[in-house]
Image 1 (spheres, rainbow, N blue to C red):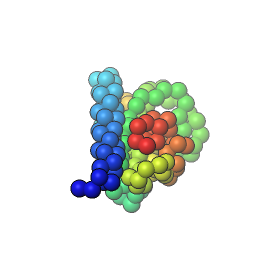
Image 2: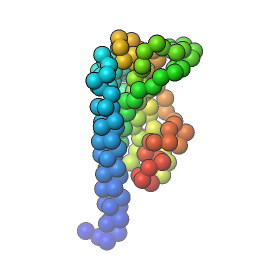
Image 3: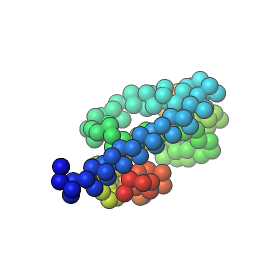
Length: 149
């Protein structure tokens, strides 16, 4: 192995380690709320991914598991409905986010995002959106703002 390849291999290993660590944290946070709701975070993600538009978007743009982050959190207060109008559901709502980088190269890159809101009580979908945005413009806890770069 050439000495010039060592920094690149270390960077790739650090990238993979960071993704694994973030996934573990997300799973631990999600499991804290699981017993309080009829619909679990895993069920909410499955409900959202079974939507035909979401499924098509996912199959078209999501290809590399190692570049992906899945996050499911409880939100309350105003959320967008299917028409983008803010509503305030009576029950708690799962915010489901599936994000994937467009490449593994260094620097801030676009990410594909699927974002949805699912009732913790009934599994009703309030809103699903798909988009391609810069890592920095989406959320402070995505890869761009952690130790990836």
